[in-house]
Image (cartoon, rainbow, N blue to C red):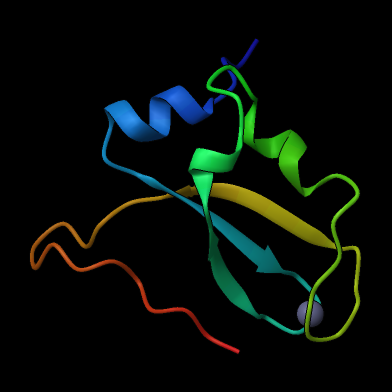
Length: 77
Ligand SMILES: [Zn+2]
């Protein structure tokens, strides 16, 4: 069974919490400090909707810096 990624993992691994809409492609970062450390990050998308198109087909996932330049991927509308 796959071990869930938690908010604690994001902090310890220098990753951030991303929210992607599978319908319109909107991508945003969420403030991961708002959530309990033991929260499975995949569960955060449950009950959320895209702020742009209203779709409930959204996913939360761990975002890593670019491996070479260290930049975070840009948000997109
Ligand atoms: Zn959307």
